[in-house]
Every structure is written in structure tokens, then in C-alpha cells.
Image (cartoon, rainbow, N blue to C red; front, top):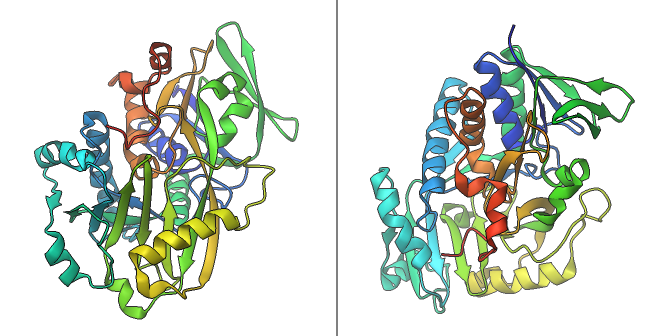
Length: 382
């Protein structure tokens, strides 16, 4: 008889994990309280960027390369354009571009490129961009954007077509028996049981496993869509790195909805169930100033649309994938933040290989690393 597995959370990580496990022959139930890629989830929203550079990290380089391969494979196999290659401009504002330089050899070994650019030529090529305070820039041709919430729905549908069971329900508790999870309690009073359990429920994970609050926190990530001239859609995806671990990015060509502009700071908190998700004036004012500095012609641009997303972050910026404390049959996936979405296909494959005994979880992702002290707070530190 096939081993049964329950996956909690139908976002990028949970959906792809359920999909791969079902393909591997497991009997899989995927559970989510609001649906795949819903607006309140960490995988919600229209798009996510997939890029390769990872500051010299071999494990992330390998995972991202595999994800590029799998996104392209399934977009072709399903005849569904979830993946849109556009290329990206990396800009460094007054800081050492070590993150880019350390990425180059690892990318090259995988067949990817990150090319240094001449700023004078760049200014001629893109007169819309103010480069006065940019000290170095790079071009990554393979960068694409992924359709985020729609992709979650497509993956869940493919999972069901392969025989998987999808259940829209809220898991409110975990029952333990000795060193195992014995059941999951649902809000409607019912319970679910399986041989193995995988938790990929983003910022809601700490409500089920309170001990993980010491390692995971939720942050508020506001995304804006500004009015922009039609020809701005021809600009590349862009990323700007600044001091104090700040990163901002945008997708100018965005399905006619406006010039997408967002940030990767983790300084604003968010309760995923209780907090208002409307525009925060403090954040908007900061973002507008950065936008106007980089794209002066957008000085009078209005916000056409807004979306507040929630990230669940680890204390050091790296993923956490490990066994639930005191449960040998429970695995949790956490710390995906913004950069985890693109790795969904590879993460799902990694978990499947792990549960079939083919691959160990990388040491970089294990929970015991925190016992050695934390010396970084995000994946952008090198």
C-alpha cells in the first residue's frame, strides 16, 4: 500500500511538494484554508521574479538552476505560459557589488551569465533611468517573471488531475502520540490522519508549532503598481541594492496593470490574520521617493493598484527545512520569504527525494544551525 502524506499549505512550496509526491506514488492530501495562491497568502499576488544570482551560495545556485529547468519544462508540457523571460538589470547604489561578483563563477558553471555593464553606455541605452548614484551594474539575461497566484492554482489542478486529493479546510491543531504526529485537527471538528505530514503553511506555521516562533517572523510587504508611459513596458526587470541590506525591484511590463514596484526589507511586521492590509503612508512615501529618484519622469505618477503580501522569514534569511520538534513523521518548510517562490518546483522535488530516501536536506537548512549563533539576517549578506 502507498504511504499516505498530508501537505498543509497550497502555496508555491506546498503545492509543488504535493505535486511531486503524488507523481512519486504517494497517496497525498493537500490542505489549504483559503485556496492555492489566495490574496492573503505568501504566494499571492500577480507575479514573482526568478533570477539566478545568489552571492556565492552553492545550495541556492543549484536549487534555482533546477527551478529554472522545471518551470520551463512544465510551462511547455502543460502548454501554459507561467514563465516570462525578460532579462534583468542589477544596480548597486554606493555599495560593494560582492553579491554579484561572487555569483558570477557559480552561475557560469551552470550555464548562466551575469555581465558587468558600463554605466555610460547604460545611461544611453536607458535614458529613463537615473544612474547618477549607481556605482555598478550588471545584466542577467535569463531573468524572468512567474505568474504567482495563477501558478499555484495550476499546480494544484495538475496535482488533482494526477489523482491527488485537495481539501479546503483550516488546520487548527496537531495531535501527538509519543514521537509521532497522530492526527491534524480541523476547524470543523474533524481530524485527518496520514503516515507522514509536511507543513508548508507560511506565516501560519507558528500557530501550529509555537516553538518555531523563536526562528520565524512575519513581515509586511507592500507592492505598488504605478502609472507609467507605454514605452516603459520595454524596460527590463530591475533590482537595486542599497546599504543596510535594502533591496528594491520592479517589473515594468506587467499585464497592463502598471509599473510594479516593491521592496525586500523585513522591517515592517504583519499579523496575517488581524492586521489591515491597506496602503501604509510611511511605506508609500519611502517607495515613491525611491521611484522618483530612479525614474524621474514618474514624479507625478499615481498608484493604480496596491497589494500587501506577507512574508515569513527566518532569522538569518535562509530556508528552514527540518523535522517538527519531537515528531519523526512531520516535516516543516519555513523561511521562504520573497525569494522562495521561484524555487517551488525544486523544493517540491527536494522534499520528495528526501522522503523517498534519495537525498538529505542540506545542512544549511536544518534547524540546529541556530544553536551555533546567527551572524546574518538575510540572503543578501555575503
